[in-house]
Image 1 (cartoon, rainbow, N blue to C red):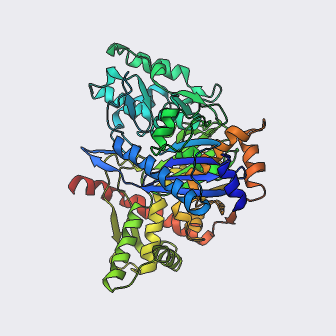
Image 2 (cartoon, rainbow, N blue to C red):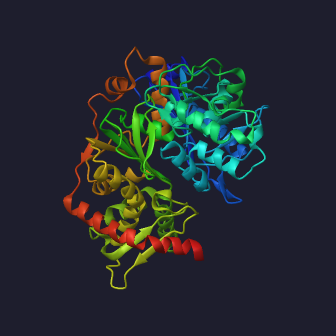
Image 3 (tube, helix red, strand yellow):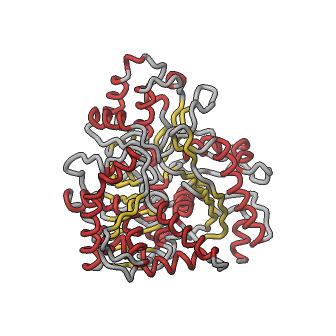
Length: 530
């Protein structure tokens, strides 16, 4: 503790801050990656006129409250006021749409990754580029706004994401880490910049509109991990810390999305490695040895924070429905006057799921709060629970079906990657809330992917920790690449606790997913009728 206090007081601690879907979290770390302090702010997106969003007040207030909470943690544990930092990294939920005019004023509300309102644009661009453009990507949102004839489009002078916006407010720099940039517009593997041919194709596609901008002019500059991304300005310091204690001048690393921070947090930036982040949404990312054989609309092509090609399966829904059911059990306990320890409740219910039938005994869960392009659901979903009349309806099977349901859409996409494209991965690293109960989410993911899954002790630290590692790399690298830095400086010999897939679990999940696919029309009918 004494060393930590001295390090913080001397301004040598590094901060990573990430805007997650339900929490904004910040951590301070030392050069070895150890967490010294943390802060958080709870928030929730809202559905405004059919668009999932957070207001600009939500964003600014949440950022400042999270940092204030971090300061309070430093004060409580070290009796210090946080005034100096060695480096800062900003991350956010990926992609989406934040356009600004020439006076730096937002032209629309923030349109998040969760929206499935750009189907027409995404399909047209995918065909134009011969490259899968997912609906949540910034370019899909921009083109959909053009197709819709939205009046703000001619006034755009800067288009960014949530991470890019906060970084801009702190530094004045309109830049983006390549991993997050790869979800704004396709990246050329050779140049590690926006694909020039596709950019020309897009400009030609909209030439008849006579907009006073080209795509290159409004997108952020692409940077790689370790690059100089600017320093904290006096206005930026005041924006982050309205109390005025934080000094200007801190270097920042390129802003990244939560996909990139997940790769850093799990040491999954080298070829044949991959990670699965499971929280409100779930995504799997595998660093490729070679290009895929064909374009798949279920697979996104993005990059690591240092620009290596990554195949990604992104699903909008993961634990929201599961968490909602846990809340029902919490209400049941409270009805009987019992105090509820949520960690204990989650742990007992998750572990009891392991006692269920391998195929969940005829119980199927659809966790669709939002739309899900991987399975063709382009509108907000309707969470459903379905069972046969003669199903083995037990608590264990009920919980197992919801755990399976949290990963079912991911499995549909990953089966294409592993079974059709024959992509090989030595190990997947799991991180996020689904893996907090030891051995449960990890084992179910191993069954879904039919691959070894490792969970590190740091898995619970998640995105803000990964972002802090990228910030630390910015100031502490000594010529080594990001993978080498993470291996030697942060993780060392820690490969995590590895679980091999249980053949019976694999067979059970495969049976579950067959029934799941057969019942998908029920989800579509529910959207149409309710």
